[in-house]
Length: 57
Image (cartoon, rainbow, N blue to C red; front, side):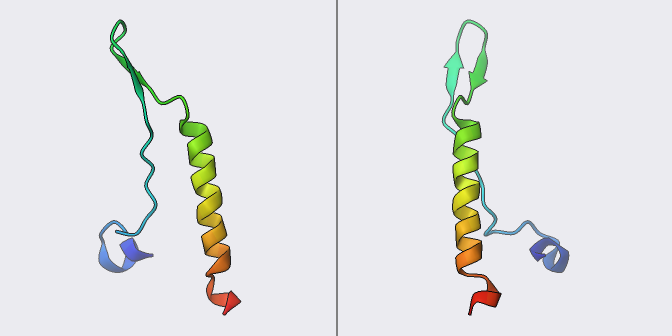
């Protein structure tokens, strides 16, 4: 909605930063816990949306 009104990215949108490891032999990065971390953050975000929804007040 913020983007539709302002044309700019929502400054309060959730972003995910994952830890990663670097394999110097292959030159690649791996974020081994990204999927589990992402699910946990999505669950927490859902909890806050449910707790603070406009309908609950």
